[in-house]
Image 1: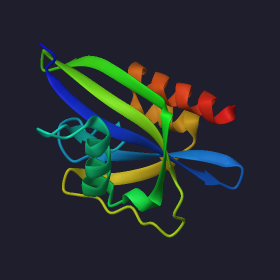
Image 2: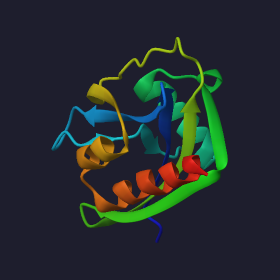
Image 3: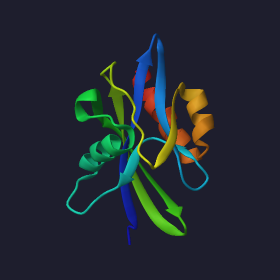
Image 4: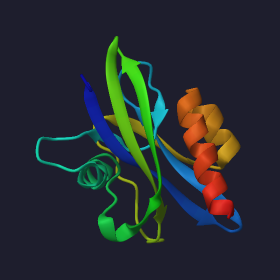
Length: 139
């Protein structure tokens, strides 16, 4: 059994010469930091879910983002002893006037450079995704 399937975007912006990643702090549990993501609804593709969840959780629209479909990562881990699969794509915030608007699921957000973002997320698999996506951008 596959378990729960979720999808989201690792969103970055270019600030001067630096790259910063968007992380949202959950308003539940241990208040961990994560990119916008959520569960795939019946009949949705993972990519459609990533757009929907980004809109619901961060208030960012399709037109605010450039998606790098060739830069994706799938994570597999357990939540409460149940398998979970999360699909992530790299996305650039291309609308400089877009404002992050949090849903009730999150209580704060930050734009952070790679090292601080890795420290913030805490989980090794998410750190690996950030590092891999940063290497993609450096090419």
